[in-house]
Image (cartoon, rainbow, N blue to C red; front, side, top):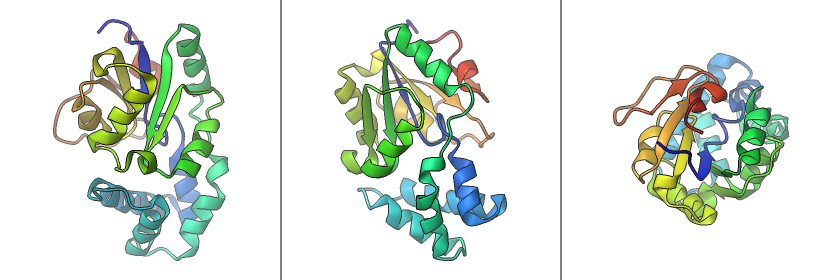
Length: 206
């Protein structure tokens, strides 16, 4: 593809290490991964938006975690850290004139707080609460494109989870996958590139 006008990111896995925050709230990595997996099942099957905090609590209950776990996740939210290369990559994209957007599966409040942890301002941030649906439904992707004022063919999407790959491709965006923790792929279209670091995922494309 030619150089995109905009690069749109999944926030909580492509740009931020949310895994560590979930694991800390759960108490162990094993419990955190089980909780996160159940949460993803709930969001993918949710349809119209239900409050993020409600889904997180339901997933914790289903995963056998105590009610204190969702509260600990919320309390630790401002401890989210970008992956080491992220701030420099975002600054470089912005310096080269590209618009930067985020489409994230959470509430408005938590989405804005999480985006601020990246240290570089975004031109558009769209949460599932604002879009009315969770990714990989098309509405969040279309909403961020509209907010940026670009057509799908002029944007590159950086997936963080496997579901983002067919989700973003389904609205016409080219997709790369920053698969930091080695998640399994889902059926459907393959990303243009897949890598364990953000700079490698974007290499030669943005």
